[in-house]
Amino acid sequence: MPAKPRPNSPEDNLAFMRAIVEGGGRPPMTMAVCYLAGGLLYGLQCLFHVGQVAGLVRWSGLASLTFVTLISVTFLVILIWAILKDRKDGVGDRGPAAARTLKAAFSATGMANGAVIIIFGVGAMRDNDFAIWLYYTAIVFALQAAAWYVAWTLKRKAWMLATALGGWATAVALGLLVREPMWYLAVCTTALFLLFALPGWVMFRDARAARTAD
Image (cartoon, rainbow, N blue to C red; front, top):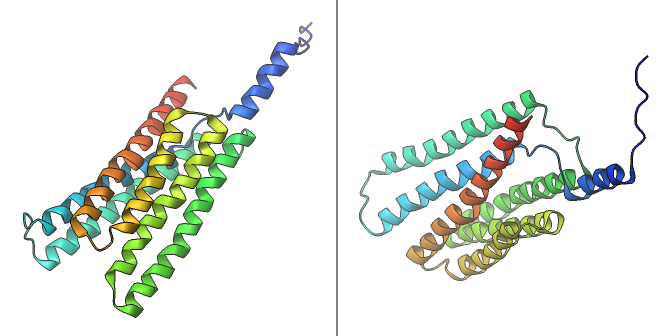
């Protein structure tokens, strides 16, 4: 006869409740790849623009446009790959409450970014002032800072709090430097590598470790 299932002990129940609160579950590859690839690719693009402002890069307008377009195309290809991999591995909306809350916070941030693009893009074209568009990047970092603060309150990982504070400081700095191209690009480049690529690598490492363990 099959053995009767063992009743859950108080320790088992406590471990289960702790897993719900702390987040558990497999980290989605999509968000990790978004941050890692986005930080590296767009950080590289900012370095390219630094070279242009400094006079070190003297490409034609068509060549520069092609390079910038390839950056975005490459990012989209990587993003699609990550989404398909998450679906294949069965990483979806189900999971612990904290994990779903964290995913919702970053999804809401992405939705807000879409509205900000329209607002500042239209404003820059209407007023014929490129500096208005540059405020968009500052708002992106501010929204990211808010999302990472939510992540920290759920996970209590020091690197998440550091990312949140760094995003807040970057947002303020960029907002004050829109009329200073070289300083603006320097801050933006540094922030993309440290506040996007580096957290992306941490999440990517954790996601791969979770899949290997499974």
